[in-house]
Length: 100
Image 1 (tube, rainbow, N blue to C red):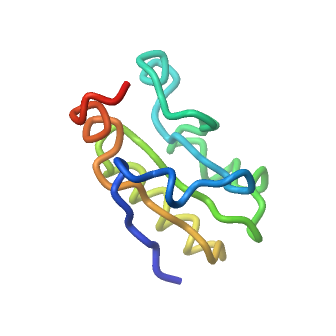
Image 2 (tube, rainbow, N blue to C red; image 1 turned 30 degrees about the vertical axis):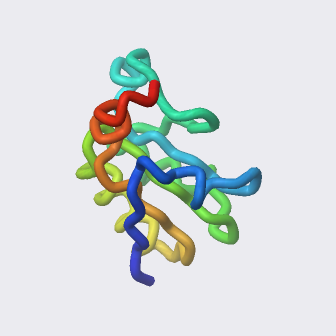
């Protein structure tokens, strides 16, 4: 399965009510803000928390700049998730647009 990369500034095009929307930053980073509807599972915890996710639903992954989310998206694809989207640029790109 190939992970789809999508610009964070257009995240609403890939997120709907059935999407599992993950923010893989550390809890201290989440305090600075996240996008509506995200659930925090830090990247370091993701391998042991994969069973919390539904493999039959889309997973959209977000982080600070796109690096950790790309890693998380690949991890999910490697364990059998078939609809995984990495939000390119992360919260830094989103914040740079002035949308808060």
